Amino acid sequence: MAHVRPVELVNILQQLPDIEPLNVKSDLSGRQHALFLCALGFEDRCLSIPELIVTDAKECKCTEAIYFEYSTNMSDNDINKPRLINALQHFTTSVRPVPCDTVDFTTRLREVLSRICAAGTTPTVVFDISVCSSKSLLLALKVIFEFNLSLHILYSEAKVYHPTREEYKADPQRWTTEEGFGLARGVGNVTPSLEHPGYRRDKLREVVIVFPTFKPERAKAIIAEIDQSLIMAPEDRVIWIIGDPHLPEDHWRADAIRQINTITDSAPSYEVSTFHYKKTMETLERIYQPRDCKYHISVSPLGSKMQSLGIALFWYMRQDVSIILATPKEYNASQYSESCKGVWQINFGELAKIRHMLDRVGQLEIVN
Image (tube, rainbow, N blue to C red; front, side, top):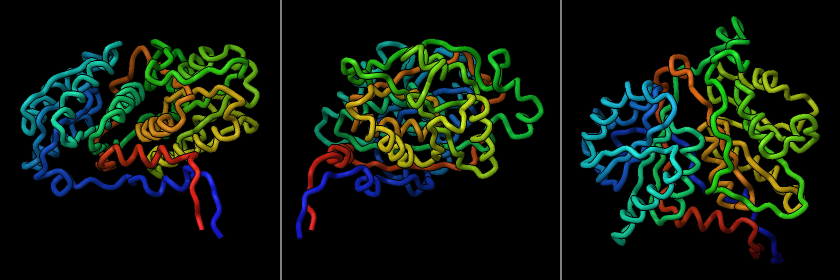
């Protein structure tokens, strides 16, 4: 007997593409792409995919390439600039930088995408997110999802993430306190994302979903920005999403992050894969559903690249949620990550179809 039911996210997730190993030669060679996006960073894996394309996918061609430039660690990042530009010039005819920490970043990216989409066909954008910050990734994806294009995301996974278990055990204070450098130091700007403003309904209390890191000061700064009272009395309105690392040897990090951020057993928390973006979407939706129309929800996106991708897709569905961004004053370029363990891809294809799938969440459907 037929009945009516709302479409739930779980019904849609299985239709979204999975992350898969990337074979640069077979997956990229012989194709013409409109735009290649990447970031210039201090990690050597910012070079991994562009240089693999040069050596293994000689027939891969892109009309133009843009690399994002950060305002932090500029001298460290510049060490990789000559090699990155050289690699990009092998398979693109135009290479140029775009600063990603300026207020006009999204405007400039929209202008580029508007131009390449004006041809009337569905252009392909290849986006290497390997060293994108959460901020640049979320802002770029927000703009990309506004256009009718095909999106192919690439990702190089680090072989070693600092601190290693041995480094952390030897000197935990160095990696976790504000005085120690660790992975990063200080808090730069804490800003509500103008591209993800959300909607603050009158008289609703605040809830914040936090993706914590080894240094707690940025998470604290974001929580305080949302509601100062949540620092001393979080109750059940600070919800933690703790990264469950992809590599088995890194699973100890989840327990360490709980200790560093003083996440108690009674605090609402979830351990979510740092690698499978759909797990982030599923968890955010599980948190959102019982709180919708009762709280205003904000997200502090300090997690992994794939978690940021999950946040971006979740926000597309739930645009009443606000995203609050925070950058450190400086990253520890000498001990952040090392080398490349493997390269991966998520081929979304035409975004019009992805948007249509996500738009169905919450709609009514008739089923037998």
